[in-house]
Structures are given as structure tokens and as C-alpha cells.
Length: 130
Image (cartoon, rainbow, N blue to C red; front, side):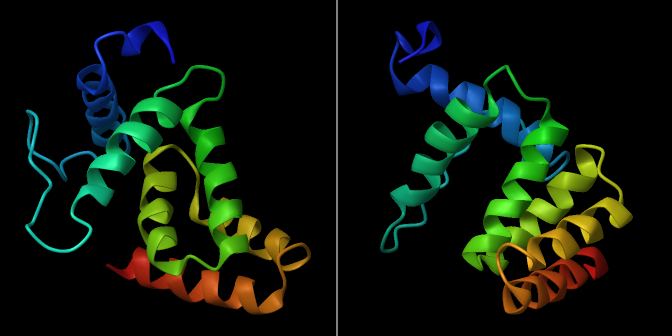
């Protein structure tokens, strides 16, 4: 646990919102928003906000652009097209070009497999057309 987390999840939520708003400018209004919807698994978004955005994206050590490159590669390897769509848009915000995103997809075909690369290309096209 970092020094930032002495107060518990409150500081991680704040760090998470800061990182997420930087990655997705204009998507979320200011302030601490309740992401719960009263449906099954409603805490999953909050868990991601604190653990992924607050802890991982909020860390120093890699620039947001580098984190986007790593994240795209992992999501492609996992075949996680739904998350990939969001992270393609985040990658653009973090300074990657469309050509660089295409190169990540091409490169992944040799490591994650051609079907995963095709799925990633489809997801990226959908994200870029939205």
C-alpha cells in the first residue's frame, strides 16, 4: 500500500478519478460520482476505479502513452474487445496515432495469434468510427 492510501480507498478513488478523467476527457463530470446501478456486480466499476485507475494508472514510472501501449497489447492477447474499444480511444488521448495503434495490432498477431489480431482490428475500427 502506498503512502497515498493511508486514508483507505477515499484517496484511491480520488486518484482513480484523476487518472480516468485524464484518459477520457469530457466523459465524466467533475466530483465523486456514484457508479453503482443497483444491478448484479455493481461494485466491479468501483473496484476498477480504485485498483486499476487509482493504483496502476496513477503510478509514476511509465508515461500514460507507455501504459496505453502495454494495455493494448494485453487486451489484444486476452481477446478483450469490449475493453479494447475504450482503450483505443484512451490511447489516442495519450498520444498514440492511428498508425501506431495499427502497428500494435499487427505486432500482436505474431504473439497473441492472428484471430486475436483480427478481433482487435474489428474492435479498434468500431472504436475509431464512434
